[in-house]
Image (cartoon, rainbow, N blue to C red):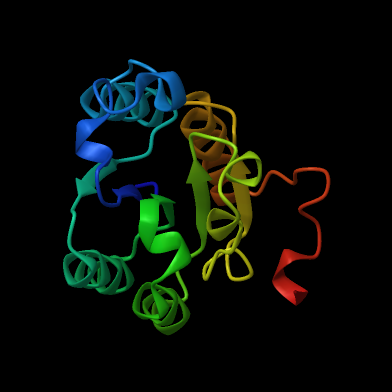
Length: 159
């Protein structure tokens, strides 16, 4: 059986579809997760998603991924991107590869959003591509699990 892929969504992402639609669009989190689950299943990978507004719950979920044999995590850490050493340490501890995703282009927003505590540990960072960023992250994760190389991703194991 193929390794599972988990999506972890941070604070306020439960409000997608109604929260600042001029920045985040009108797609809901449930719609994103349904699309990801459908696509992962079509490629033979189990998929699960989790959303929390609480840092400790996200840390617990990352720990669980390490204990459950999860192959990849897709994470939009939301505001915890810029503040959470705990989430960073959880990823370092479990060594599950992950892709960091941001719906908006954080580099075109407030300066505090440009600092990520996670990106140097991530295999990739997708920012500013709207909700399509999730689909691209899933494609990348599946391909990597299946041994497909991506241009520019070579040598990640040595980084």
